[in-house]
Image 1 (tube, rainbow, N blue to C red):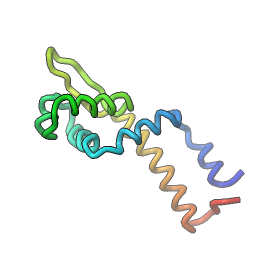
Image 2: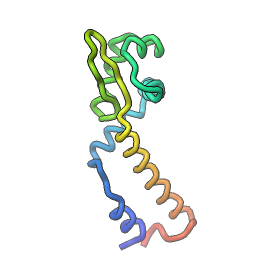
Image 3: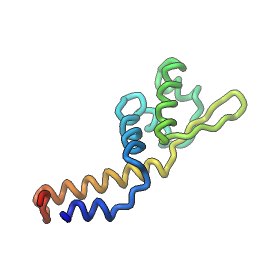
Length: 117
């Protein structure tokens, strides 16, 4: 068993590969990245997001659904209004995955250990 395989086995995954891929795919859009950036400050109403992003409500709804389906944001109804916020655990799981990739990249970049074999 290689060093990389042992490290990958040791990292406890909380997400299935398909769920992880869905989250990264949701990040692959400028508007959705801007939505997440705004939500870093806390919960915001759809009306605020529509104005801040200068997009039609229907387009915003599409992007918010994509982020929600990926498990990156949650919504809360308050009468007629819907408020969205980041899901901290989802962000932490992405951070953990990228951290493990970074550690592997350092190992493969001549920082000790071997990549193959």
